[in-house]
Image (tube, rainbow, N blue to C red; front, side, top):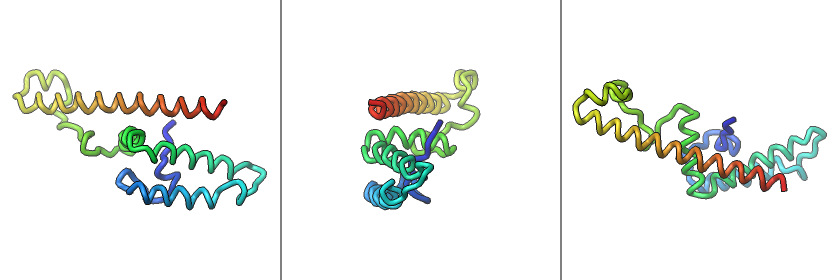
Length: 137
């Protein structure tokens, strides 16, 4: 299931938020929810701190943040500069094969965006799996 790391770090944060602001938000939240400050019988502080650590581990690296941002935009239904969807008439293969050459460029751009998205999904999934394995050790 998709986890919104920006929301975990604070309200109003997004891929456009500068790294320094994300870092500040992470440290403020960790101080607020750390188990040493929030001792509960439910383990909420531990769970929240783990969530914050996972969010920061992903967002602090420019490479993993870029891959995550693609997934974030897909989940939110947003389209960033590399994920703009072509016009409806150029999304089907039958339309692009019989359409003028301008439509073929849109189809090619859509294919590149789909390939980049697939690569980002794979990279992010591999990173999440590696993080889970590290936690289990």
